[in-house]
Each structure stands twice: as structure tokens, then as C-alpha cells.
Length: 262
Ligand code: MG
Image 1: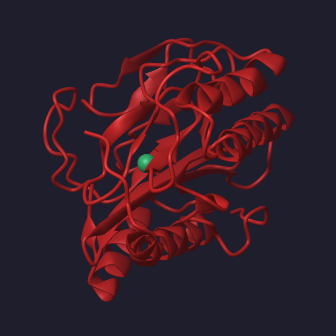
Image 2 (image 1 turned 180 degrees about the horizontal axis):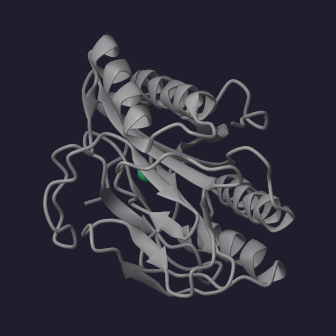
């Protein structure tokens, strides 16, 4: 079901958006060589408690998940692309780390993800981060009244193709509101001019994720973490965006959008 939010409701969703952005900033800042993924999850947990927010992940148990997620932060390292289940692992120099976080504040959800390099970057990782982040920007820019979902999808897919990357469309963006996952689905590739017409009040997550060498994935033995089929590295960027008569509003904008690093 497609739900449209009033301007007042979108204003209220800013609280969730700002909180989710602040947790990504804090966990990214806390990431570094030798830091355990479980410590990052614990930090996010403490911030949730301090804010009186609710995790969208801890009890999350969809059909494709082996058991409830049990953590509050997704930590996907190197060849892990999505849904990285935090485990007892200390980050190493040069690791590519994606952090994905969703929480509910005062009954409204926001969902966002970033990818950072831990320590010394590899050129190809910086390039993958740049392409994926630019795909998100292109998708957000297409989220305007009068466009259709396919215009967002095509904008994302075009950035990937121009960079020589293939796109997996099994997982993509989704409606965000009272819960984390709703309609519409926002695929990371598609045809312009097709799909749901965008109207003021639509709120959804746009989340390109690309892998350097493949568009195929498999599920890790932990039942959650999705890894690239060929072991190549992955990046993932996500914002929760409201379509308004004044253009797209990024509810999960960070204070230092382009200045995040570990
Ligand atoms: Mg997310």
C-alpha cells in the first residue's frame, strides 16, 4: 500500500532522520583499525537507549533471514554487500566498511547507510565509494513530483553502467514510514518514465549498492550477511527521502555529508 505523508508528518519524520544520521556519524567516527564490529553495534545500541528510540533491526525476521537479526547495526566488511551481521571481528587497515542503520523515533522510521574506508584506502575502493555515492545523489535528484519511480531507478543504473558496474536488483529502496519496509519498491535499475508516478508526500529509502566485479550475491553461513559471488568488494549508500512540492528532501542528511571517514 502506498501511503502519502502530510507536510506536518514529514516534519515529524525529521527527528528520526536526524537521529539515524547522528548514529551513522558516531559509528563511522568510532570505526578504526582494531575496533571490533560488536563494539560499533554496542555504541549504536547505547545511542538508541539514550534517545529513547527503537531499533528496526533487532527483531527483524523476514522470510530470507535465518533468525531474528539480534543486532541494531548492519556492518558489512569488504566482500559483504548488505545485511552484514556484526560479529567478533576487529577492523583491519584498508577494510571497506558499510554501516546501515534504521530506527524509529516517536513512531517514525528513518533508514540510511554509508560506506567508509578504515585506515589506508585502496584506489579502487575510493572509486567504488564515489560511484555508489554519486548514484545515490542521482537517484535523489530524480525524486521529484512528475517523475516516476523508473526515473530514479534509471538515474541510479546509468551511474553504475557509466562506471562499468553491473546492478543487482534483488534488493533496493523501499517505502519508509511507521515501519522500515513498505511500498513502493525502488529498484536500482530500470526504465525512465515507467512505474509509480511520484507525488508529494511519498517517503522512501533510495539505496544503491554495487560490487566491483559482479552482480551476484550469496548468503553467508550466518544466515544474514550477503556477500559478492566473486569476492569483490561492495559499497552501499542510502538516504530516506521525502518527495515534496519543493523538491526532494533528504531526511537523513548528515552534518558533514562528504567528510566522513575512519
Ligand atoms: Mg538501510
